[in-house]
Length: 335
Image (cartoon, rainbow, N blue to C red; front, side, top):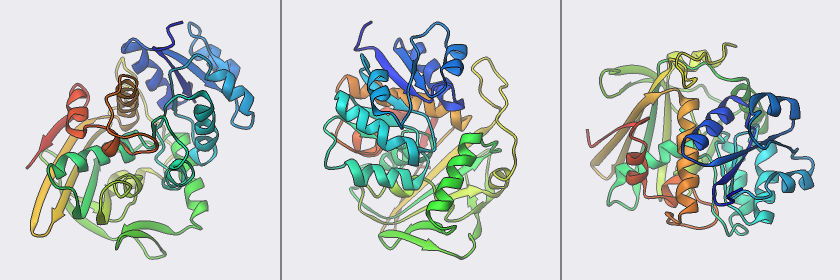
């Protein structure tokens, strides 16, 4: 085995994990799928070296990472899986990347490992958290700070996976049913209802009703490296309504993607000046795979700007990173 090419994937047989394994293979890496269920692993990846491991058994995680150059964690809830897999990565001396959208899990990663990690640890390297952070950093350009950051998610629909629903339940339980936002330079927990307003997305989406302060992992990733007092995230109301449904994403193409389309629109404000950037694409779960795998590729070739725990916008050259994914993300800046 070429150890410089081997990348372990925890939760490989899950919805996003399968996209990650396929993306690794398409880029010439050797995936090492691992997870709790050996039968599911063998059925999903009969041609690969699969390994059974559990976060409750550190020795099994060590065996799963043997020979790997990096690990991607695609197994939620990340409140349960992130810390044990990061610990195993630290023991193995390899970089760690995850696709966690859970606000609390990402906060834990920064709090628990910022002083310990020597190899890169990049949480939320996915559609929520990582992509928004890359867009914000791109929109800032030569600015080093902002007064306000606004990230609006325009989803045509949102058919959440079982993992998404489970992770959301864990997050709600951890914050006692309260909602959370980033305002006045800190996280705030509130009991009031989310505000509703209109957001004008790039055409052809145009103006849509959105839920304001629909907080995602961006309220962790962006303030982790940028001085900013307000980070607000928004979600189209039609997509938010889908969260209560039980319909999983359905594949419509040979890549396994659903017909869901999205626009992520970012506005940053400093004083009286505003700057914008946006991307569009298809299937929020599928696009998390090239985000995570490109992160691993850059880490392994030393194309990074930080060490230890860092979000995407701090770890990488944000505009260049987004440009490298032009096949799956259409970038527009400065509208």
